[in-house]
Picture 1: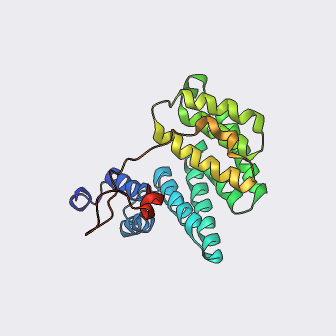
Picture 2 (picture 1 turned 60 degrees about the horizontal axis):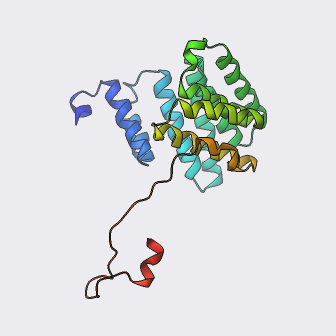
Picture 3 (picture 1 turned 30 degrees about the vertical axis):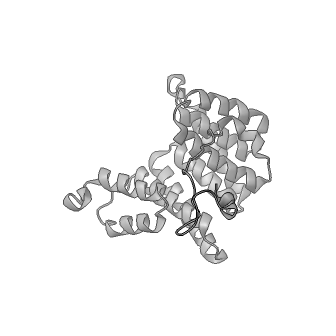
Length: 220
């Protein structure tokens, strides 16, 4: 509703689209951006957001040709975002997407560029979760496994209570591990706590006696 009242408010558009993406509404999020495409600024945030949406499509698409198309679009939008900002966020994502596309040369090239940018950052700016999470991702892509754990431990110290950050990182690094056929034990340090959901007593259904039906046990 806020966006309908103020369609030129880029902050609201960005947050609304991001919320759709995080809730699994990828197609709705892309449609939202397309509806306002002539009003969207050509900034790193919006370019990287569109890249993220195409990456989500890439990861879920079953059709091989469409999957490759989405992956390429994601890679290109991350590179456009990097050209704008020269920051480590879009280039490390471009590196991971390149790995998933099977392009190890570009993957390594972009991962090394991310490490170069990280190395140039002032020491007082290194007290940031994503600094160390990005370093761990780059090191994992480059198969410098002994160094990955060190970076992940530093990232964890800066995000003990922000489970969302750790969950996002773990998901991304798991993709890399699975693609490289590396055990996820390597990234155990950043794994978020397990969530247990209590659903209450599961009844048999209408006309049945109270209690748990043996057939329902698998759903608990």
